[in-house]
Image (cartoon, rainbow, N blue to C red):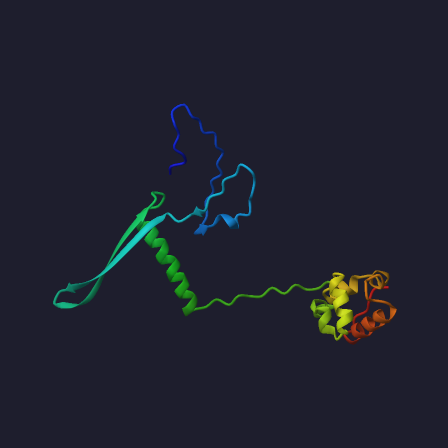
Length: 182
C-alpha cells in the first residue's frame, strides 16, 4: 500500500496502528478524533474483486447443465480458494439457521430487593397521575425499583411533589404490594 510520495531529501515520521477485523469499518464509527491523527476507513476483507460467469455445459449427451466459473482476486493475505471456502461456510451457516433455527434464550435479571417484576415497571405504569409521574421521571426516578430505593425526604424535595403527592405514590405502590423506604 502506498503511504506517501516524497521528494528527494524529505522525511516522513509516522506512527501507525494496525488491527485485524471483519468486514468494513467507516471512520465515523471509530469515534477517535485528535489533532494530528488521520483516521482511515478500514476494509478487513482480503477479497478485492469477484467475477462470475454461468455457461451452459454438456455432460455426455445431456446439455441441460450449467457451469459456474468464479474468478477471485485477493490482497495476498488469503488464497482465493480459502476465501471461497470461508464464504461458503458462512452461507451454509445462514441457511442452516433457516432449516433448523436455534432458539435464543432470554436472560431475565432478577431483582434482589424483594419487589420482583414490579421493580421493572416504569412510574407511568403504576397508575400515578401524569403530573406526579412526569415530576418523578424528570428527577431520575423512572422505575419502581429506583422509586422504592429513594428516601421520603428526597422525594419531597423533587419539584412539583409535596406531601400530598407522596401519599398518592404510597397508595399506588401499596396496590403493587411495595412500600417506600422511610
